[in-house]
Each structure stands twice: as C-alpha cells, then as structure tokens.
Image (cartoon, rainbow, N blue to C red; front, side):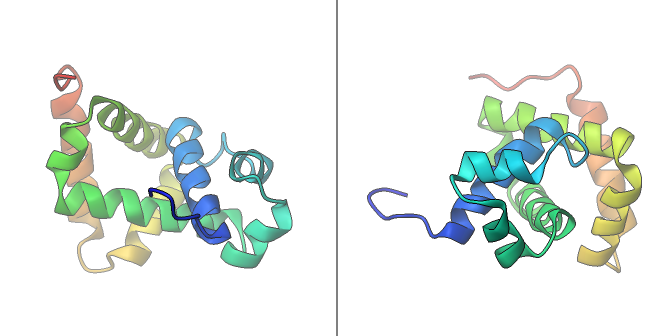
Length: 131
C-alpha cells in the first residue's frame, strides 16, 4: 500500500486473511489475529463483531478473487498454494461453516461455486505454477 498507513480495520482484515489462509477457521484465534495486526482483541470485536463474521469477510474476498480473476491466484505460486490449502482444509475440516458462508454469500449459486472449488482443488492437486 505504499506510504499510506493502513486503517485499523484493514490491518485486522489483512492479518486475518493471512492467518485464516494458513490455519483455517478452527486453527485461528482472535489473539493470533490481534497480535499480527498489532491491535487489541477488542478492536477486532469492534470492527467485525465476531471471529465468524471476520471469517466470512475473508472467505468472501478469497472466493471473489477465485471466481473473478483466477489467473491472479495461479500466477503467484505462494497465493496459489495458500488458496488451495485454505479451500482444501476448510472443505474437510470446517465444511459446515464453509458451506454456510457460501450459502450466505451466493444464495442462488453456492452449490455451483462449491463444485467449482472442489474441481479446482482436484485439477490442481499435482499442478504447480511456475514461480
């Protein structure tokens, strides 16, 4: 973001995005996010109300990029691996909340998006992008 300072809300979101991508919903704590964002836990609750609502925002961001500009994910090997890992772990370790989030975000096409994600994971399981 250059020389511009991130707002507290953006710092929290960025921290949550990177931690959820690594550890998924169940492996992430509010304290981890607060520490990475250099804020107190009350700030997270103030801006996002709950871990689940923060997770929903992160999932929306990741899926939005996935659905609208998949080449952005594929062209960056770190982002590719993080996104694939996140989808894989959430589909198998947190399926209920992940599907609930998809249903809230995309009520008419959530199942199609879910199948698209599953197919992408299956088809990229052995394909790695060039760094």
